[in-house]
Length: 149
Image 1 (tube, one colour):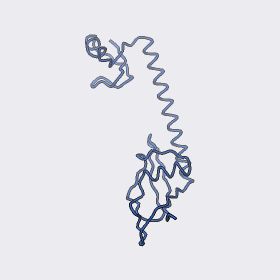
Image 2 (tube, helix red, strand yellow; image 1 turned 180 degrees about the vertical axis):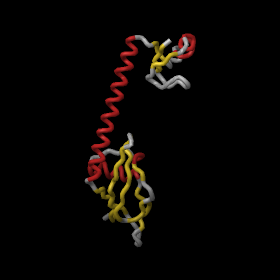
Image 3 (tube, rainbow, N blue to C red; image 1 turned 90 degrees about the vertical axis):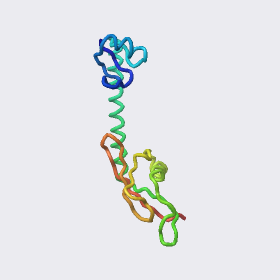
Image 4 (cartoon, rainbow, N blue to C red; image 1 turned 60 degrees about the vertical axis):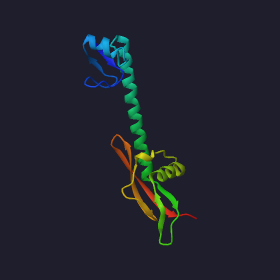
């Protein structure tokens, strides 16, 4: 019997796939637990529409990521910070600080989890930080840590 999986099912497939399973397995296990629906013409059509929408959304996300990478190339994010007498910052500049500064200064929304800081930023000066947008697209954020006034 052909069924369309509504959730990932171990050893059978991922959500949205059409798979062939035995009649008893479908009737006694998949259908009662709402893990699958019969592969009727209407269900197959719905599955194809959902797949098209998912692919379109992926393309839009890739385009937005590429646009953000282009924006990042031309900007320098200035982050004011307080430091002691020897120029060492009180604490460190975190990926949350960088994400907030990007959004506030240039309107570029980046999740803090996507910003990768190789080593802690604990002094004034220029830095370059990687930003992973997903889909193997990454950019560089140019930072300038300045003295807070």
